[in-house]
Image 1: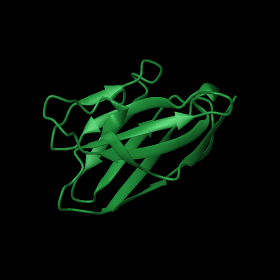
Image 2: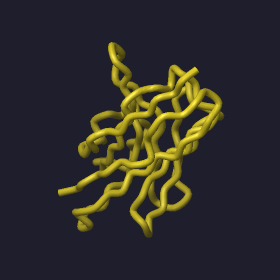
Image 3: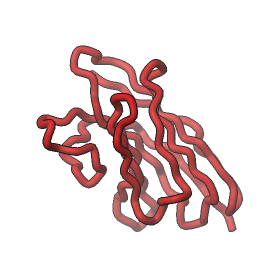
Image 4: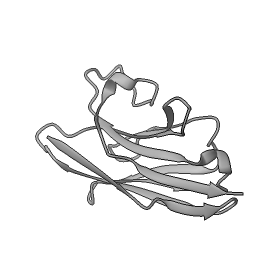
Length: 131
């Protein structure tokens, strides 16, 4: 069983920065090789934000809306995935969720659009950006 815990959310003014952290614990026999972040604002769909293939130097994927402003990274020793968010905008306000998963095939990628990969989810953490 994998447990995910997000931290680092909060309130910030537009243009500010935050760093979200997601620590994972539990099953190490079959470690997850994909980690990602999603968000959901009130009245809006669940939206993939960024994801990463966790073995060292892994591929990263970003939604167009956050490219150039958000950076996903992974510390495998600490088993923590980060989402550095810069130049935040009010439209970035949402509940942010961390997710983990393991590809069933090496032909699959960790792109957040491959939602079937992501089988473990955190409880979410609020990010609020004021104008």
